[in-house]
Structure formats: structure tokens, C-alpha cells
Image (cartoon, rainbow, N blue to C red; front, side, top):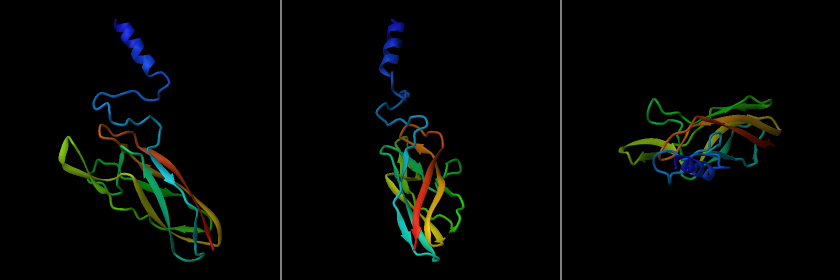
Length: 163
């Protein structure tokens, strides 16, 4: 009988990339290696030679949250944008939005600062005239109501024109 149940269990998950975990089975589950945050890139135009701000839009998948750039707690992984240097572009320090208070049913009195849904990071730049592409990564840790998953680095490519 055990062998039959084991075979049925394995067959029910054939072709799936995730396995259920003990706990709230209705909660979304992160698939190993899958990003739970997407970069929503939009072409922007800035004034050449002037201090300008690029706005990078990100979307956290429904049912998940990520810690803000300044989460409450020393053990929490902060969301961090890193941008590589690019010819003809000076990049300033990224400006992050404030996180929203987020609490868990198991600890209703405690909150963390998190991003859910859409959020935007402002990136100050001064660029020479022409087309430019900045490359970097958004480092974050996605969590659902049941668990937090390994830290991920989402590749980010920001294309813009300076005129």
C-alpha cells in the first residue's frame, strides 16, 4: 500500500518543478531558481550632461513580498540595486521607496518593512549624448506567508537615450 501511495504522489507531481511543503498548502510556493520579482523596463530619454533621474519599475509576484531596502531587523536581507559602470554615464546612489508594514499571522504584533506589488527605484545619472545601457542586478529575498526562499539576483538592463 505504501508503494502505491508513493507512486501516486510521485505521479501527481510529474512534470512540476516544485514540491509541496508542510504547512499552508494553499500558499504560493517558490520554484527553485525562479525570480519572484520582474524588472519592467521602459525606454527613457534624459537631458545630456544634466543631472537626471531614471525610474526603474519592479513588480513582486502576487502572494510574495521582499524586504525593503531598509528592513527592520539585522537578520533580514535588504533589497539592493547594484549598477556596473558604463562609458559616458555617471551613476549616483539609488533612492529606494519606503517599505510598507507587513506582518505575519504567527506574529501579529511584529512588522517588517517590505515591498509587495509594484515599486520603483530612482537612479540618478549624468550621461553624455547618445544611447546608453546600464547593466546591474537587484538582490532580494522573496518570501510568502509560509517561508523565505534563497536570495536571488535579478539581472537588470536599463536602456536610455541622452539628448
